[in-house]
Amino acid sequence: MGEKYKLAQKTKAIDKTIIRIGDINIGDGSFIVIAGPCAVESQEQIINISYEMKESGANMLRGGVFKPRTSPYDFQGLGMEGIQFLLEAKDKTGLPVVTEITDASQIDALQNVDVLQIGTRNMQNYSLLKEVGQTRKPVILKRGFASTIEEFLLSAEYILMSGNENVILCERGLRTFQQGTRYLLDFSSIPIIKEKTHLPIIVDPSHAAGRADLVGIFSELAMVAGADGIIVEVHNEPSKALCDGKQALSIHEFNNMMKKLKKRYEFEMTQHA
Ligand code: PEP
Ligand code: MN
Image (cartoon, rainbow, N blue to C red; front, side, top):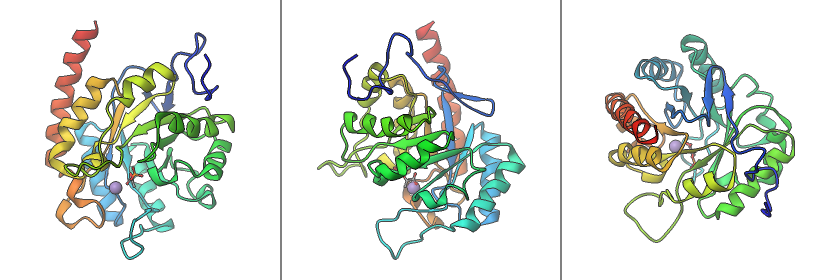
């Protein structure tokens, strides 16, 4: 009861929040898969990938158009033009779309996107949190890569406090001394967050791993830990990706992972029955 995050904390009255996006429910015990490229690279690329994602059983499509890159010399995303391509992919496949917002000035341009993503670098951009809180659009809030769970939940609180109840938390890994993976995926945050809040939480295995070969096992571990879903990077030609190619699954690899996840989900259901 005594948590600082008054609205995010679990109470007797509110023990879970289910977020509805079209006919998808996040937080109802199902396992949602959001998949697509790190960045929208062209009209053809995002439309082709979107058909493949739909075919493989993904629930939503991701694709960044405003890319927060570490180096200012790297591909920064297609910007406004990319939004149109993403919305075309949505129209063609019916898949709801997720994209990152990096500045409040983009809110109007993103009005037809289904879910706004706040990236790890912006988790503590409190003015941006308040602005997306003014909308009623579902928000995926990624954990800062050097943030405690309490800081993470207080960031969610900014969005909730501004009136937007549709917050989906996302664990995406922390910066530590270990170098085996790009970030250290903090699976422990999942049961802790489930205990402390009513908000759904998904996992981003791609940015945590930084390498495609670990994405499948991290996704299964996320499911076992109790996550409500994953957001995963997939590319039609990972070696040629303009952004985050090393961690992108090929379409074939994504298909295989989906089959394994389906089996794992069925097994988990027998355990909880
Ligand atoms: C992304 O999803 O492409 C991304 C930049 O993620 P993060 O903010 O977790 O690094
Ligand atoms: Mn990426």
